[in-house]
Amino acid sequence: MTTPAAQGLHPQVLATLGLAITAGEYPPGTVLRSDEIAERFDVSRTVVREVVRVLESMHLVESRRRVGVIVLPTERWNVYDPQVIRWRLAGADRPRQLRSLTVLRSAIEPVAAGLAALHATPEQCRELTEQALGMVATSRGRQLEAYLVHDIAFHRVVLNASGNEMFARLGDVVAEVLTGRTHHQVMFEDPDPAAVTLHVQVAEAVREKNAVRAEELTRQIAVGALKELDVLAP
Image (tube, rainbow, N blue to C red; front, side, top):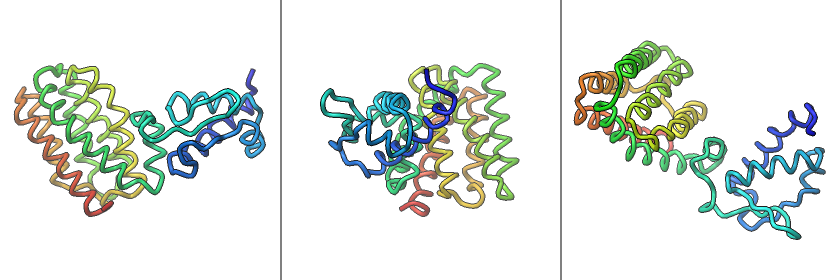
């Protein structure tokens, strides 16, 4: 059984190795040996096994008998895993990762918004409006953390209200993108007023069941996000 102390070490070892792998410090094919990891971090083999198990679930590594723990190539990684996204956004590859995720959002979220206009419940419409107004209220005075809370909630509602379970599962991915660009200063000191207004208009379009307008407005939000990256993370 893992002791409470070991449980405390598990996240530290996991984060250190995860960040190192996603940053390319351990290139694909690198062999990580359990005894060396245990010695480096001064942890038990049990802790190492648990960490490796988590990394395997993300397809960052693969255990092979008589060889060790092998770092897998990027194309094998579960790039939708929120933790993997967080690690990649914390590394030097942040601009490319942000752009890749923002392009993904631009492909998915407009369609999700159009579907939300057709399928959103009255409760979801209210929630969308509340979060949009929360974004307005926190969009000035350098309240980026408070704004982030409403921004994440807004996009989760859109994805959930689409009625498509595949879109809904991308809520954590979008949350990591929005969090990453805020925490890594890939944001202006205050959100773009035009973008804030667009969120309010999306909420209105969804409430009015105007699918075409909801999709188009959300596409404008995505285009604006890509333009921001051109300035802040070229």
